[in-house]
Length: 392
Image: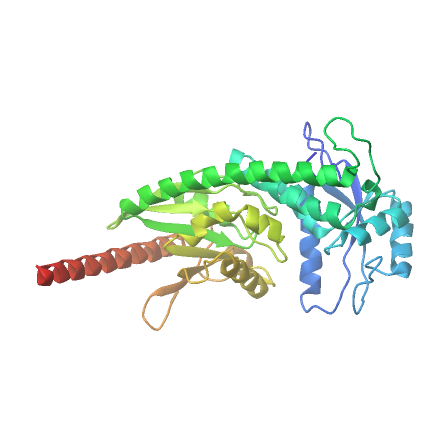
């Protein structure tokens, strides 16, 4: 079970679902409420929960003590008892006090959206770097619960063993977590330096660097595999990919480019995760071109594009050139093809990574981008030579 996770999701031996859950998604007037609720069901399923019931309702604002209000909490409690669920999942971020109060009222584990996403990341991380990033994010999230909500740990303990005289359990836990966070940050810094060396080697080779970004489950890994035949893990679930994978892709007339598959984004992505994965997301920041993959069949695609662009701005990649890739056209009946901007540059590609329709158009867009970079480099080099000649 992951550090800080509030429930055991699945039996790792046979993959059977182990825990029944009641989902709570309240409507506070957001225009994308239904899309958010459907996405939350996918999150719960991706975490391994067996969804037994769902509770909704409208509110003008969260209740300070119980988030959902006493009447709604009573309804949730009845639903939990009727279904036999052992965990209640909230599609909202709960304060430590709200989570503690809800667990007392509901007599079961209560998991908010942030903790649920952290649990999924803990299950999916496979590389050493990915595991370190996830543990760091979990500990940083846990530390806020210690500071703000765990009043039962404030009791005094004697000065035995590791604890100093009069030190509370809360202070001890906070100190141990802080020590572990420091170690993990040091490891990530070392891994980031290694990644920087690798990136410089690619830059010296004057290779076009392309990163695939997009909302989770938009088909990024499927597109990556279709282009590179890399065999990266791809599945119809949220956050199937956590670890960045980079492969070389040969393109006629321009040679080799590098293509990186990155972690997917989602609305209200926990800031602790964005911070912890910043080293991995550096691949996005340093890329020459972003392939922004969009699920063309999703009714929420416009909002998903906005969410991805918001995260890109947060990590400093807002200025990186983008090529919009409308994937899954086999599900909405659109024709494969490209759209060009007023300068004649390909700005949008319509394709299906699953069927292969439109992949040639995307390759052509990459060829044009690589040729444009080579031309810009040639012009810069000629200008430098001319300036040096004048100086001489």
